[in-house]
Image: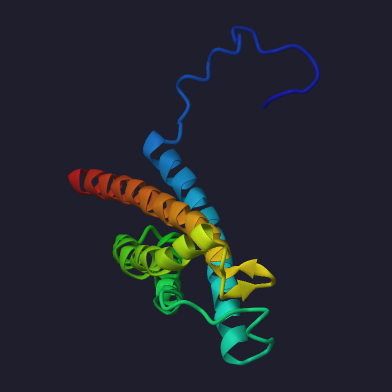
Length: 183
């Protein structure tokens, strides 16, 4: 028993902690990677909600098309990026490798690929805007191309970090599984 008041037991100088159990670095890394993936999933969800709101507002004519323009073609397949978000959220609580792999593959297909296509789709419009100063689509008074490129820059970074952390997490889980099989 420890005593908050009084002297220490004779022979103990505070250096007796080395024999105690510690959390293995593999599991510490897994916990920190899970935390990062959860944070990135939240940012991804916010980006998805922004794009879903734009699509819904423009298709249901909730405001005029002068206020919120029609969505670009790349935004529709990007709405499917909720699938990798859902799979990665399912994989985290029980270290499910299968869902994590599905999330990584579908992230490339439903998140990164539409962003690449969107960059190419909007490039001529951006070129026209910056050469001639003419914009034909607007989102709350700002050029739609500029707003969408800003969203794309953030989205590309989020998805790149998501894939990176999911790969590190996959390696961590796979190594833990291999160690269990050896025992």
